[in-house]
Image (cartoon, rainbow, N blue to C red):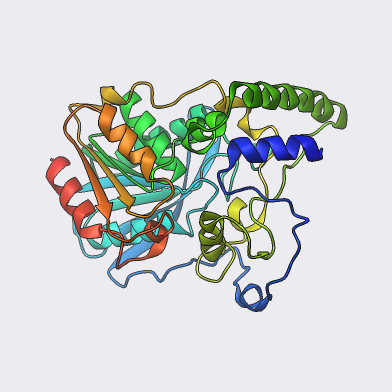
Length: 353
């Protein structure tokens, strides 16, 4: 078990998945202040916006839980609409809801949703992801938006945050109903799981990971259920973690961004979660987004910046990469004074016509 955990840690590295047995030296003061109710949102609802719970199914029959944000007092006007999800391992009460709140304030109808198998959405087993199904989740949200009487179904765009940036690009390449796409703090989850950060995993390491994951399937079959992997983030920090892990901790494991339903705040992915990501590169057809416009936004100091820079090189026009000076990866999760919402507003207002 320790051996496979080490290998998966090297491969996923998404949150620097650390052993739950980390030495705990930091205090629990922040943890004691965290709101652990499922109804908790990590941001305040705008007084210019309404929010209502909604549900819709993807084409695999999984019921997705979402929040529909609408600007107040719009009358009978048909609105441009957005679907938003992410980051990878987060829920709609965190970043995606914050984005939806901001964009609804600017006049869009917006649905923020929990991906399949996580949060309040359906799917068994829990805490598992799929490059195919999570791409489909975006198209299911477009289905939902296109059926709303106050939405112009010819004016729908999507925003993907972090790992759901990759799924958003993949969905846009496949689903021609999506007229424009933006990502913030983009992660290509299939690339990072199969190759590690900066493509550092060797062929030998990859082969060993696949061997151990394959054997884990027999263990899961014998147990009658899939086993959880190591916690995404530890209860507390030792102090010698990589800087990006400290930044994730500062969001997910403090009152700033904690939510009880979030895998990153409160749980672990299944050990076998990487399997479907290892051989399925989701951004193979990113050129086919064109001629629809693409906007990538990344922090200047984000460890994930290279994902956006690499995609902008291979995508066809129209495309734009916006680098936020001084920002790190998680700054684009919730820092309203850092996230360029006016840019997002201008981008979608111009391209959802």
